[in-house]
Image (cartoon, rainbow, N blue to C red; front, side):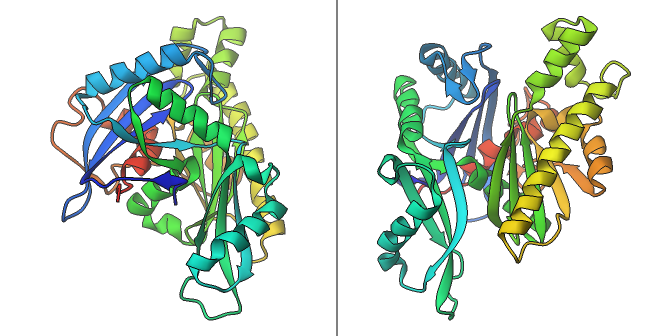
Length: 349
């Protein structure tokens, strides 16, 4: 599902604008399986983006142009996503009808579920059981504040780019997981995207995104803990967080922040069980994003939640063209690329 899309191409270029990093991925869609053909990652100047809001468009637009130049990508049309508190995803039921007749009904129903002025949102929906025969049908509703979408489009324009598709973060992640982890499409599964400032929680029931939440903890909180309590520089703290071993300096913060994430996930899961009668207990958790690589974090989460927690990579099943990772360590950057790869897996048609 996407908020809107135009055009058609055998190759899709996607851009993920994060608070700490910009990520680019290109996927070729030929007659066979999709192939990852380009990847690039670049840092964003500190505080240029805060909690998803672009504070300095000039700096960010310049960084985006530099990223495309580094990647050798000349395509101007890109797939991007919006997310956060200003995006609502909800499963609803309406009387069964043709999709062509459903828009006005879904729009009216959306007014009962979306806590925004319905005239100020971009609205889309997908019928989950189009072949069903019951009197009612399940519909997945998504609504995003129009300002959020327009701000993202303005940033692209400033960077000299055009939107091919505006997607939603949760759906892009779902797209990447559907290809790489088909087992994640069965039962109740949580996808955690641990970013620089925010951890996105996306809970699926049999492959359908039913609930999204944002937790105000990300790699920045870990770094600030180390700077405040251990007197480390930002560079030394980041090196520890991006290392490969659990250390005594890092361990208490992984325990504390891991507990914070686990509690947030448990609350989201409990809310879903209350709101959706067919939702059972959470069965598995997958982590991605920069924070997924923090040494010991997935282990701490697994022990706290008493279930399997796996660090995810888009390269689990997606084939990468030779040379794509010549200048990057695929194991290191893989978890960072789940969202942007999910965007690039969209065919622009």
